[in-house]
Amino acid sequence: MGDLSPGFRGKARDLMARLPPGQYPTESFPVLSAGPTPHIPTDRWSFTVTAETGESRTWTWEEMMALPQEEPTVDIHCVTRWSKFDTRWRGVPLDAFLDGVGTAADFVVAESFDGYTTNLPLEDVTDGKAWLAHSFDGYALSPDHGGPARLVIPHLYFWKSAKWVKGLVLTRENEPGFWESAGYHDYGDPWREQRHRGD
Amino acid sequence: MHGWRRARLAERTKQTATGRTLRFEVPRWPGHLPGQHVDVRLTADDGYRAVRSYSLAAPADADVIELGVQAAFGGEVSPYLADDLPVGAEVEVEGPLGGWFVWTPGDPGPLLLIAGGSGIVPLMAMLRARLASESDDPCALLYSVRDPDEVWYAAELDAVGSAGSAGSVGGTVDVRRLYTRTAPDGSARPPGRMTERDLPVLPSPAQARCYVCGPTGFVEHAGALLLAAGHAPDRIRTERFG
Amino acid sequence: MNEHPLYLDGNALAGPLGEVFAVDPTTAWRLCPSCRLPATVAQLHVYGPEPGLTARCPGCAAVALRVVTQSEYLWLQLGGGAGAFRFTLPPAAP
Image 1 (cartoon, rainbow over the protein chains, first blue to last red):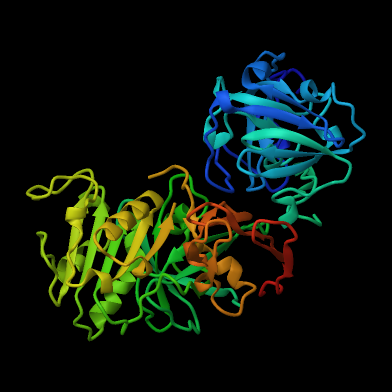
Image 2 (image 1 turned 180 degrees about the horizontal axis):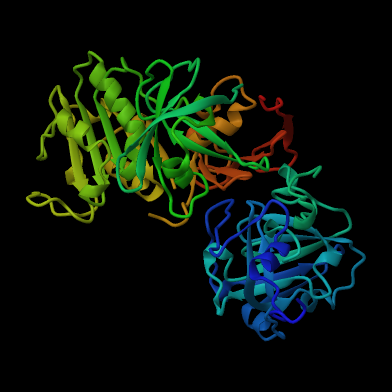
């Protein structure tokens, strides 16, 4: 049998191995929302990193776009149970914003223009694991999907990938965000099905 | 405090290409008010559960309830209920639910019902209850659909009758349809979005109870028209769906 | 028809909140602390879908409550702050 169809892996089986427990694959891109969609013109957009000391640094849209860009292709997993394979983004790795910050913080809170917040361990948004993304599938990110720019942190449930993000605040303590303070899991690993606190 | 009850599908009726009415037998159903809804819960083999809300389309008929289901393309629950759940099979329901979007037979004053698409379902429960009541207060249903193929309860609504043209509503029940995309041959009104001229004129608008149900954009639009026509904000009750 | 509904209204909360309230919660009345607009729960604008529902003032969109549904628990956060209540739901009927 070793000489039959070499290299064939079986597409369906291959994709199933990429599907975390309790998820289903989708070709569409459903919208999960917690409020009205804000429309932020890029000339009024900025991104601010604030250390636990209060020290901060802000990037304008042009400054952000001038940073080295990456084009990650990643699988994303939503707590509403859809997963989407091979999503193509363009944006700036968060390391570019965090590398110059002197900090002893272990956590970070992402804040959005609409008041949304979500908390993350700092080590989960560094070393190329997270991006500030402004393009999806080759086009400028639309407002309903978080444009002009959102976080993309593919190894965690997608509520952690804050839409309409405006900044990161470094914190010494873990400070639960919008959903984490109302029952969602603090960390949100889809492979361990960490949907709710206690999962 | 509620609880889930088993409900057996007794009958499914096709209303439109994607709209169905489903009659379920629910032992010891406690009864409900026109406008209320139920939550329907489906359980997969692996324990996964999905819950959705569906409006009750008729006054309670002993242990039988009638739900309206509009199949959403690619939806998780509605296509299953619309076409796949076998007659005789069971789901779970919780309800009746909601005490805001309800009309109680005996509520005095004119009654104005405005439906967009499958938003007709809870308003049909109100209309049927109104027809079964002894009220002689004016009542009008304005039913907005894209084209004639999308009318639910077509024969029943025809039987209620239609004044056809604009004008004031008398002591009877007046049913009007308006078409936003394609009107039937011979329609005096060209197809188009509902305007203030389409609103039935009730004798004392400020006293009328208004119920609006439909997609979010439709409900916003109808609510604005009603306010502009002198209806009282605290007498306009709305229900939005996706 | 919108591919994505903008929002539903608080009528849709009757089921989830009914799990923990003895009277119908959708007729409960509240004055928005941000814009002073009065509204019942039924009139709030509800964003979702589950497991996380956010109900907002129909006037100013300030958060009025959040509900997170789980098979064994219901989380309820009243107002826009933190500190949600976790209710233990009765076990599902066999």
